[in-house]
Image (cartoon, rainbow, N blue to C red; front, side):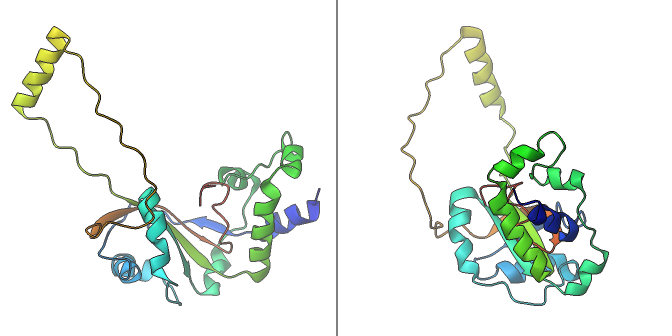
Amino acid sequence: MNITLLKTVLRGLRYALLPKLIGQRIVIGSLQSIETDIKAVLGTDLPSDQPLANPESYEGELAKHNFITLTFSVPRTLLTDCPIVDSKTFRELGFVFSTEDKAAMLEGENWSMLDSIAEDVGQNNAIIKLFLEVEPPQTPSPTWRQRLELTIKKIFKVPEVPPATPKRILKLRLEENYFPKTFIVRDACLTNSDAIWLGKRFYL
């Protein structure tokens, strides 16, 4: 049990949700233009002071999940008004913390995440994290013929023949015509830890 580690995190971890950015729609033209396209839409709401490193590294994440998680370095002065997390926010971020289950956390796997966060807290660098998801395609309304066919199937109980399930192939490269794509900012925050979403999004 490392109570000191937990105290370090709870006394120094800063986090603020950025609702103004959430819901923004951004058209990204290519892997290389990710930063330019995002900043063109978010403007001064994303005061990044360093270029986004190696945008090509996001290809695997996009190919597998159709989302990307981006980390932008911003001026440290922004942390002045960024609050320290309380226990409620700590739990909402996916970290176990309460009188009832504190012991379970102390014996569980959360320590590896807390180690990462504690290291970040010590460095106290300001970052803005964005979680962007590909906008789902619009489903067109059925034509009158499609509605008629559906009605006939219901009346006569015509069984549906399920299509053959193709073998799943793990793709780590994007198709040539993948871009341009419209993305929606699903989550955004200002923090001093790049590991802030490890509990909330364990697959990152």
